[in-house]
Length: 415
Length: 78
Image (cartoon, rainbow over all chains, first blue to last red; front, side):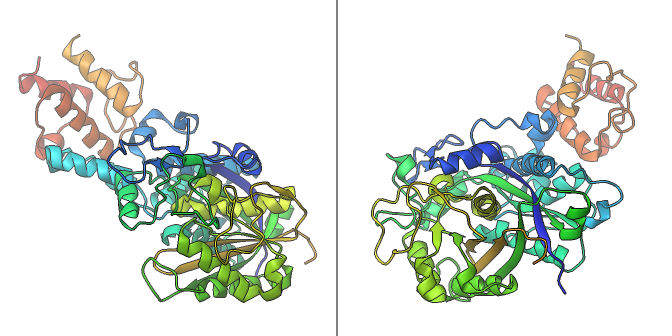
């Protein structure tokens, strides 16, 4: 029988705030984190807005030397992991260090460092490439540095499943505990890709919103005037524990992570197929894994990117899977506020799902004035809803045809 | 500022150590907590600051602050 896994700590650093509480309060208030790009001169780009992390002081968490050497996606992970462990009131002790693991996902890793170092190479030749370039670029170095900092000696990995990376990481961490390979996992997603190549590259794919004059209204999932996603950045980390381990140390339990589903579209490198059957199937697999029925699902934190195709096909997938129950479900996209944090999105949105359960508040989909054609679910438009729920799901889908879904449920010791 | 002071200022900045720790006979690895990557980065900063080039075989001979100062003097840096 699989072991039960509970969520005991949360840490977040997002375009909405530099802590879990700031982020959650801003989300409940329906605040947009989108603004003009400050990380590079974007004047030549079609899209000149993004959801950046603001006023983050890494020196609160690491030394000056580390700030210089690590890419932001690593710094974000170190900060969010420290916050999550503090929130869990957990210090990794020597007696369970080998039973504590780390899986933090990232879609791209240290893209800003790669761009800078390549510029160094072009300008001054190979001798000017920093010896710290490669370890700042590698996507698994967020997990690596977190394991080093906090002394976690158990299983370590990194999910790089594009925009599903954070969810894949948490799903794999859940399985690692359920299977008995670890008792504690530090997991989530991190990304810092508001860079020239990412903004330019996604722009060439016509995937980004060009609503440059109205940044705070640009990310508008499920709205008829949606015109693409907004690149966001940040990190969401959660502490997962095996149930008896958490109970024995008297941990506060936010929720149970009850199920994980992962499927592949086997269709196209970037686009979902009409109806998004693979997404529906990943939701079905996750709900079955959680031992729940379709009617038990109360809330879905949607992938809801604000692209024309995703929001329509995700809606179709939810309707095809849930049938009549789809009308009773609450479905919201917090990307309307955070932008699309790529590999970090799964980490942050899993946290939103857990907080919705724990706080009995459903964060809204902002900028939803006129739902698009066929977008007829209850998207919790514009205003957060105070409502107690028993289950919350988090959907994320990534390039390569990845569909990853987590199911959280209210913690009940007996079932 | 003397050459020694200039060198020590760079070391303090790069290795996140104090001036007091930077006695001339201090070993980068044993006394200043540096690893091989730290030393490569540090010497790249020296190259930049003093407009010189340090070949790999020269780099391998450098273990202490005094070694850096001697090397720079030998290269004609004042």
